[in-house]
Length: 149
Image (tube, rainbow, N blue to C red):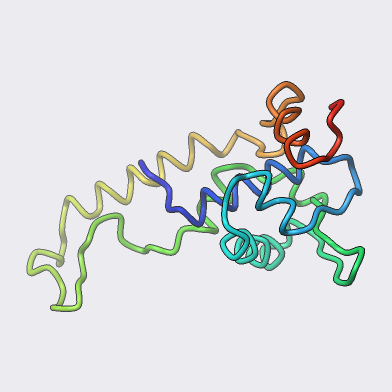
């Protein structure tokens, strides 16, 4: 199964925040530089992660984002369920109207079950446990944070 680009950016932002020293604030620009994604995409992800209660955001000159306790314990499955904006796993509706086979469609229901099985496999994966020092050291060095990680 493929996740959407927004979920991808949100996961990457959470991984960077999980790797930062506890309590350290990272600006949205710093996160964008770390994940190699445009600022506006990361900004939307940060807003959504805040709405989900996974990060704390402080405004102002010395502001930024940090992972909170809920963010430290969220699983990949739970996060992806929250970020999924598509109700149907297939293109069952279109501007021209619904698929004529939409009523009691076996494929549609099977694909929904497959999507849930995908999420269930990720329900035991805590996002904050994924990044490691070897992986994150070059990322942080590239943006000028904790190069000795």
